[in-house]
Amino acid sequence: MRDKPDHYSLQAQREGYPARSVYKLKEIDEKFRIIKRGNNILDIGASPGSWTLYVCRKLKGTGSITAVDLKEPGKDIKCSNLKFFKDDAFSKNFQETAVKTGPYDAVISDAAPSTTGNRTVDTGRSYNLAEDVLNFALKNLKSGGNLVIKIFQGGDEHQLIDIMKTEFKTAKIFKPKASRKESFEVFLVGTGRLHAEQ
Image (cartoon, helix red, strand yellow):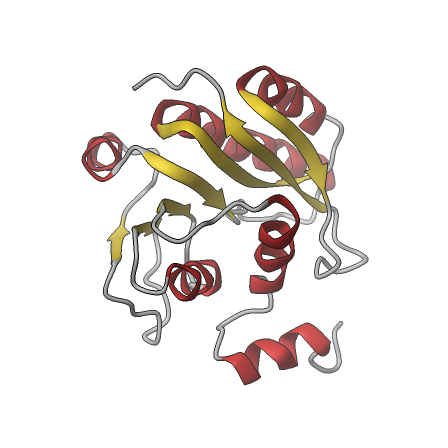
């Protein structure tokens, strides 16, 4: 049990982010240069909205961001170039929306499955979700585009990174400092999408 907010939680409160997860994306972005001003970005599994808000602030009114989640983001997640969709990212309805709002310069996803406490079950569900995000991104990313996907470590993440190595200029497994030490989450980061389908 966590007794008190840690450094990242307190910093998130000070900077107006709904969750400490923003610093995972910030570190990934600073290391791999995922998001640039003027970009068209898609955030899958956006609620409560920390990643979306980070992108809004980084774009500074340029480009656009499309965010999708089954839950509404926090009421403070507002910017002029944001379109939020309350939907399943992998539904037929949103797939059609993505074609209209895409293609994207980057697809980012901090989405996680509902957890059971059984690591085998949870890592399996996380793998399936990450695979769905990857397949979605390969259809909707521009050439040269970037991808960030959260996944729970279970060994199978290497299968996805192997696919990404054939589809991106670089593909790496990365664990940000802001991830809790006890967490078995990592992020699959692909930069420089090759031969996009558009």
